Length: 120
Image (cartoon, rainbow, N blue to C red; front, side):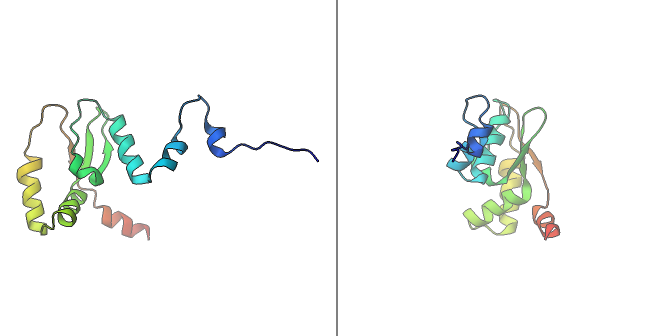
């Protein structure tokens, strides 16, 4: 009988000896991993809205972070128990009008709910 040593997928993909993506994903859930990677790929001068990590959807070519307005609204409704009107007013007055030192975030309306419904 011949004994063959097998490798795990993590070992196979570990080409450079550095911790790899699969190992990192084992230690954390996908949402946290996505947020971590988006922030890592952003410019060091990019403004991070930590209270809205759940609304972080991407980065721009110049390293700015991109947040979805609908998801930002959902954060305020769920976390702070705001009504839709109050959440929109808060975002308009306290977030969208703010100018920060650094690369200001980009705000987009992706209509994530409509996209997810169309995939069903």
